[in-house]
Length: 303
Ligand code: NAP
Image (tube, rainbow, N blue to C red):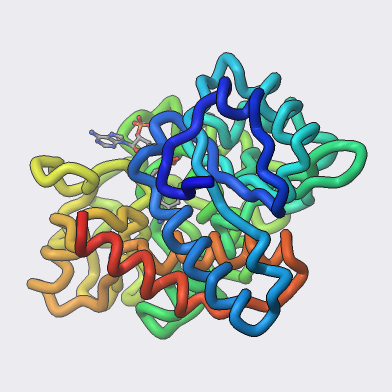
């Protein structure tokens, strides 16, 4: 089977791969880096453990209206693991048999593991973010002041991870007030909620603590012409920047951060580590994320 091909629902109906199948599903999905990095990992593992030579990771474009039927088919075809990307991360909650505690808190799942009675859902985005920040900026979220830009699924994963890691304070800023309020309401039952503070005015940014990590969890930065999600000149000088956007390799935000001598990184590390954690859940083995990172970097250079 061809792991570069984009498969469809009708391909799934005819699916007859005899090995251990994994896949990412989304819409659109053609440009996903997940097959490249996961198959690089599988090739490397199979050099030491031949059983992995029967594993392969595919990509499927699935319409959200067909998600529930598709997940039943993936299960009957015995796909061991699935990654979910836009627009399926929340929708899939209704189609799995159980959800891990941290995925429940995030309210979205990005990783499914096959069990005889149905898929179990996990969310590895928060772990990916934590590891991405640690490896790029050399600091963790524990005891940190964190400003999160955005109020969608990625922002919520970031808030939940920051709470889990014991961040000192968590600030959230978002374009639409309604969505910010929705996010705040959704988080209100979590331990540590008192540490979370919405930032509704530009003036409030100058009042932030001296040091911290600003995380861009908006979709701004994906296109070259996108405006900045935040003008960093409004922030205290010692805040570093982690942009979840990973393509392009430099965004307007990380460019401005560099010009202001701030530590900064785009989000490839997050993508790599959420994928590595997913593979660890499926294989129950520790994996080397560096192999995945090298494969993803190479693929981004070619694109
Ligand atoms: P989402 O649920 O659609 O949320 C998008 C967010 O971006 C919302 O807060 C939205 O604000 C904001 N936004 C969109 N357009 C804007 C604009 N023109 N001006 C200001 N704010 C704007 O998306 P998501 O799933 O949370 O993903 C957010 C980003 O994280 C995406 O770029 C995604 O690729 C990235 N991500 C990266 C990784 C990784 O592994 N590196 C993993 C997950 C996500 P409103 O509420 O005002 O609309």
